[in-house]
Image (cartoon, rainbow, N blue to C red; front, side):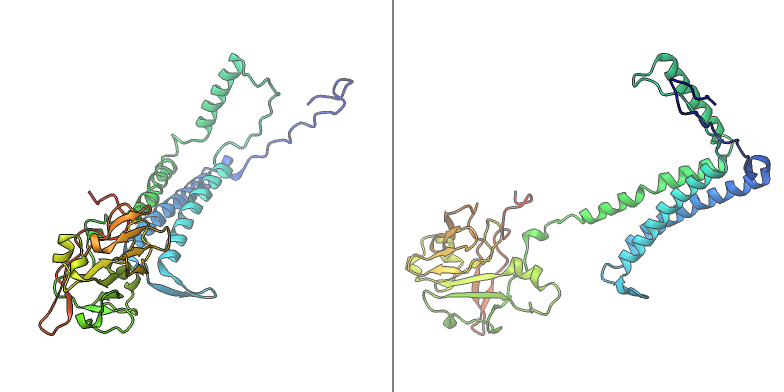
Length: 331
């Protein structure tokens, strides 16, 4: 303790006398604290395993009733509880370890310049070694091993979350619901289309047979399978393959713009041009739906169509290439 003088008018009160804890004088109490810390670390490990098990086994769409919150996602509830418990137990175990088993002697040191002198650096290393020794990490192997186990398992929670980056898309981006024999159904009337339902210069939108608006995956599937039908005089169709894939001048193209996926809905029957309202990409439907203006990178995919025995328009396969904007698998 320093007394007050002219240069230092405020006396240093010093540190209060150290009072030993029960763990410092009773080894049985120290063992109880050690087991408590180990228990917290073990519970953290079990909670981490529970987190992973919940993520793998609980369906995303399952809900549970939790009073007083109400109905909530079972997966979110399980993940939140197990992850929170794992973090809490690691923190609680570390705090209990520090408060009951590590040295609690308060140390005071004089202020020093920002740049440490060699002797100060040496003192810091000595203090570090002394602190490591007083933490009893080497002597209390139960705490050390369970702590390492908890810290080693906990990062697995983040690794498991990488599952949401998959599964890999495979070839599903290349395919839609269209297949050989699927009827072309009018989007407005929900009735199968006949060639007589379309007149020259008309624009009609269609969907695959069996796809209904109340289906849970309707939006996902229609975003790939939406169809645009136009009827052009066969003599006005410039592209040979487009003519072969049509039926009596009825052409079937994807309704999804190849720029950013907007639905195309504007058609100029004199020029046979289809316009995307989002960024004005323009496609010539009489010439293989080639891009003649705008930012779209490639033509609209065409669906080969025909007529079945009952006189209804049907698909003769899927689109000739992936629909919508270009993606990394296009190749």
